[in-house]
Image 1 (cartoon, rainbow, N blue to C red):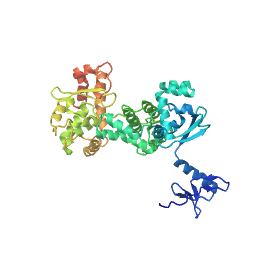
Image 2 (image 1 turned 90 degrees about the horizontal axis):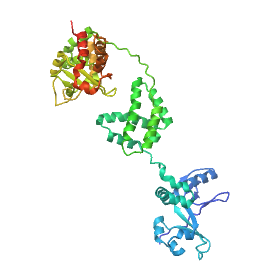
Image 3 (image 1 turned 135 degrees about the vertical axis):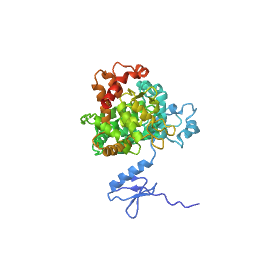
Image 4 (image 1 turned 135 degrees about the horizontal axis):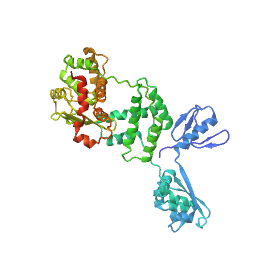
Length: 454
């Protein structure tokens, strides 16, 4: 038989308190007998308190339930039958500790105390409160528990990774666009250190995150800051379409709306319509570029239809009818408003000169058949305007020139100029515009006269 040695004697303090599980080593250190953990502490009282905390974490929580044996025994015929009931032992997953206060021969008067592990008791009690609160209310004498079903039971906290997964599952954007949209949300999560939605969007952390964004020297535009905050809200809102707790989603959105807001926009609007000489200088200088046919089409289509560079990069052949000479699309911004234009002969000729690569749906594509990137083409335009000798011209000036010419032309109704610019045109229904895009011809003709007529 293996030698096990003498059972370790518990430590007795100088004030005669016995501390089971704690011993003092010969070198003066303290030792927890169960785990062999050792620690150093010169003060005896501090050492004892620390040991009690360490031992408390090791001992499983046990709840003692006391009742008359006749109430606990239930269907068992005798008290001994109940104590020996294997079903009880299986439920408790261990031999129950029983204490009897009274005579075993008189079970009606005896008090039985069963020590039940907390990991068994509390889940069982929660289940009973949810499934039969009226029975629990009757037993404990709190009748109000019967109405527990009408209360919203708190659900588990939503993990931030679940928000990201649900957003990507329900978003209709491309994989690249999804990753870009998630970046501001991840920045919030990394800054706050929150592992759940509630932790990451607490009011104090949202305020600190807003200040963090405002202090970023790279973020100077109110519009850029607003876009970051809007993307965070959009990710949370779209994730709410999944099987997530709507209460937690709504509360997080409410806090974000109240605490994440951009500063006032201090940019002064200064529209500068491109002058006729400057536009023709650019048009005549396209031969200086690597792709003159592309730049000619960009310049003419941008002026003809009042398009930003981003709109041109996203332009699709499906939006053009070169035989009828019309352009119909919807803006991504401003509630996806319709924008319509009639094409000039010069514009149609420039568009027909463009190659169609790899069955791409986009009008302006690279040699690989992929659409151009807005930032890349804007940078290319900066080099182009320098070579052309008009360094102060911006691409937005071309759009401003088209809109200003249409608005200022005599006999052109303002609503048709707004339709050309992609703004909401009062009094015009979308169905009517789609059936009759020629209604915007007077506005397009006014732009042509301003830049091409003698």
